[in-house]
Image 1 (cartoon, rainbow, N blue to C red):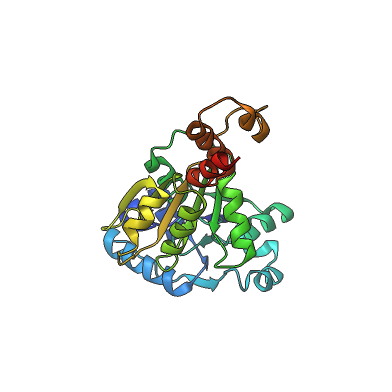
Image 2 (tube, rainbow, N blue to C red):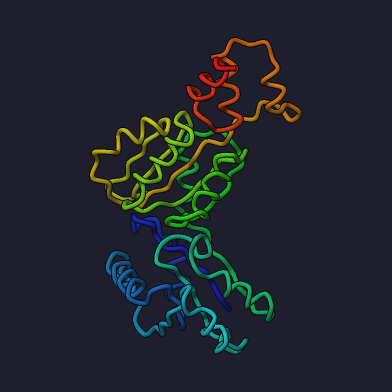
Length: 270
């Protein structure tokens, strides 16, 4: 049997009894990084007075999973097999999905234990009342694919949730401020850790705030969805309305993502 075990994303107390039991019973542990998992089990053992010795560890990550899969047989899972990523829920922007698919394709029994997850925790912390969201993991560092994905997120009717590193957070905020300075953004860093901190403001204000900050920690970013005016309303409908330029500019900004000031100036010129 295979059991996917979520591990704490910061606070060790977030490990569940089910997860501890599965790790205790495990004979073979597939790990995203064996060093990280061994250190985690050492800390959990000390904290909970448990013995995690005599385990077999095998590396299983995005760069070697295809090679490892070729070595597996259904007999591999006649023992208690566990998979853990470095932190959080396996398969959520982490390896593990290919192991699950292997079990499905080969009739191997498997289970997933609920547990710590940065995406859902950040969503609950954000205060957004939208009931749907799209999760994008980490954006590409640069290039057309990054710009295209960011444009898709800003024009989506769902909340956009993504991860960002401390080295690229300012770049992301600058891009968001340039594309839609009024869009509301929620940021949270170091979830469940000592320095957990949240911010919620429009993209322009957040960019100005962080320009002079020493940005640290891992971040979850939640982007307010594009406001929909109505299913049958398009740009031509808005442009034809007899409205004051400022109000019309705000409506068109919501629909296009362009800056209100730029649209206002265009309206005055026409």
